[in-house]
Amino acid sequence: MKKYLMSAGVFALSPFAQADLVGDSHANLGLRNFYFNNDFRDQAGSLGQSKTEEWAQAFVLDFKSGYTEGPIGVGLDALGLMGVTLDSGDGRHRGSSMIPDEGSGASQQWSRLGLTPKLKVANTELRYGTLMPKLPVLTYNDGRLLPQTFEGAQITSTDLDGLTLTGGRLNRATGRASSDRTGLAVAGGTRESDQFLFAGGDYRIGKQLTAQYYVANLEDYYTQHFVGLTHTLPLSEGQSLRTDLRYFRTFADGANDSAAGRASGYRVGGYTEDGDGKIDNHTWSAALTYSVQGHALMAGYQEVSDGSNFVQPNQGSLSGKGAGGASVYLYTDRMLASFNRAGERTAFAQYSYDFAAAGVPGLKFSLMYLKGEDIRTTSGNDASEWERDVGLDYVVQDGALKGLGLSWRHGLLHSEIDPNQEQNRLIASYTLALF
Image (cartoon, rainbow, N blue to C red; front, side):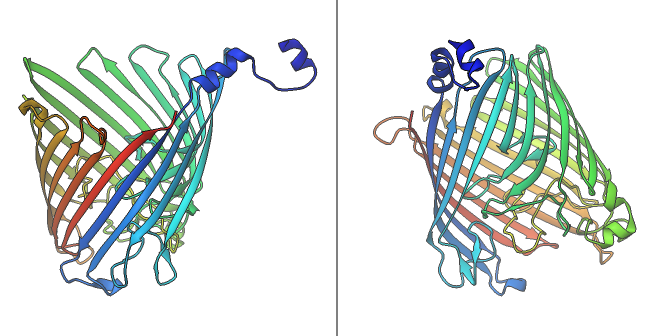
């Protein structure tokens, strides 16, 4: 039967292949209701207002297929995203922080569809299309109603025991509050790059120790090397000490490495050593987390060198495309600030508690404080900032509302660089399994 179909030039799937492709497929509909309130403490700034207050509903259709039978499995994933504005009245919409701009106000609805064909050989998978990478050199942002997405190819292999290898090439991004794709850039850059290359691996040494190395290149902006080490030390029953060490080395590439290229827009914002927008940065951090009976206390320190801000892809400076909203792989990347400016030294601590230890499963609390000092500025005066974040989460454990997630996030920022801000987020989320 297969020979006949192939000789006739017709592509078809055997019943067994269809069973794997279709029978192993599943789809979920994610619902996220998001209220966002950001008070700029009466500092209206260039946008002429001191407060953002918006409410919206997200629908996320996530389909993942199985694979066809045979040495090379073939499949297709699809991601449909739609946001609907519930409330964003006059004077309460500021830029495209959560809801895209439309004319002089907020868009009433926005959406996008991403398709991702995939191939699998043994334990190696190639995906091409819409991606949401979560790697030390690039992490998608999911801090608002809809997630940020990227376009390109990514290959992941776990064929070797204890070793996960990852590599790929990306060329487009879509912001969390946008339906438009853009090229790639860094914060402060106004020219688009068409290529982000990355490769690396995670090697698990025994049960407690993991070593990481990654390298990435954003064409015409920078090359970045990352080395990481995490270790979990069991102390006794229910107690452990986790150590997380991270080091980044980032330097100019292509146009950013020339005066003409930087003058044309391939530059980084903020302070640079010679005031020319050239990327040159070392960033390291160390964090220790002690866990016992539902309690977790984390303390750490991070240091950014003086040459330039720490960078990873950030499209927020690209004009008029709602591309803002980016994450960086730092412990200090929080609700309101990232503490990644040139020269910044940050001490941070977090306490969290899982109430399952007290007989209330599904309820979690966290409190974090960060203090950054010695920030280099273009004025020549060093600056400082601090942030306090509170989080409370609950997932309904049983009954008709089982699986419903409720979250509250509160952040307070006092900064000599950015406007002082107080932010609240209220989020209700639920995932409905379709098949």
